[in-house]
Image 1 (cartoon, rainbow, N blue to C red):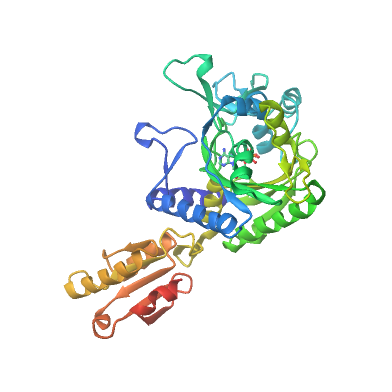
Image 2: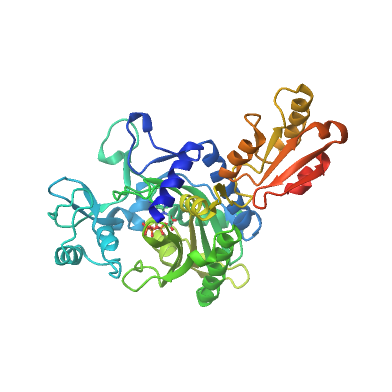
Length: 451
Ligand code: ATP
């Protein structure tokens, strides 16, 4: 059932222009995907809604758009060049590579592997004779750590001095620019710095569709606080994150919080919890993360850069390193979760019950018939009335039934039809995706109706 659901979603995504395999005409490139016309619009809707919820509506949170390529010193200081790695094993028979932790997790449901050293992973694989997922052989190289950062070179000569990295997370941009934001905006604690942007990781494990890809987008906030009330802020963010995703219609029964065990915690974090979603592939997996990162990052960058990154409290004149709560939302996993959760098959009808703020089109406009100039012109007027306010689809192919079917499948919440009666009284029919009910309303009321 679950496999079938994923197959249907992958195929619908491709057929209807949500997501295409990356570089397909050249045979594809593993773990890369293109967002098609509808996918690109839906991604934009998610970004806009997130930015509106956490930046525009929250005066104490400041937006940022830092660069993908930063000084390599940033990644040395943050520990990514030495410690941002996964344990990899290679099958000696088919020479394909796999992440040791994923091989174990996919085969042994109760074994927790995060934080275990490579020798321990080798032991578990050997004890349980875990075979290669590609060719079935049991003949592995020992696990070795490999770095997830993508290397690149600045300039035309690939020498070590020109070595740079594509960012592995957006978070470092917020720490590195902490002082600049404080000096330009004069914020009072608590305050946050937020950004949405691409991150890159050299992931070798076969991804489940867009769940794990080489490049992806993070929507992330570093929320700076005083140490003594970190638990209060942590709990507040837990609630905000949960409310944000459930407000978009994702079923709470398929979501859960999971706290990281001591072994899993990053060395600088005192507490981390993930929101997990019950994905059709392998059950509950990380959707978002919430971490209490202490004052580790600012202190560390201050030490390595030699720049004083302490915060000066304007009322008490104290100087100190603020502590940080970090809510991270993966954009692509949000997209995937929304698609999976919205997919409904009901007596032969397929529809995506996407929130209207997120659906690629807010509405579709149809002329009832194609060959009546007056009706087409009137429908164009309606289209022009709404198209600058909301993404709007136009469809004059086939019959109305087919058009409804087609819009249901891509999650369009409303379909407006211009017919003969429209020419007489300026009313149209508006059909609701979820109830399939049709109402007659005035053209002047369309915007109010769909708002
Ligand atoms: P995972 O354990 O699944 O590898 P992570 O713990 O490394 O994830 P974080 O570093 O906490 O992930 O990144 C924050 C968020 O970014 C994740 O919650 C997830 O939504 C998203 N994310 C991380 N890696 C990827 C990836 N390779 N592809 C798509 N999204 C990702």
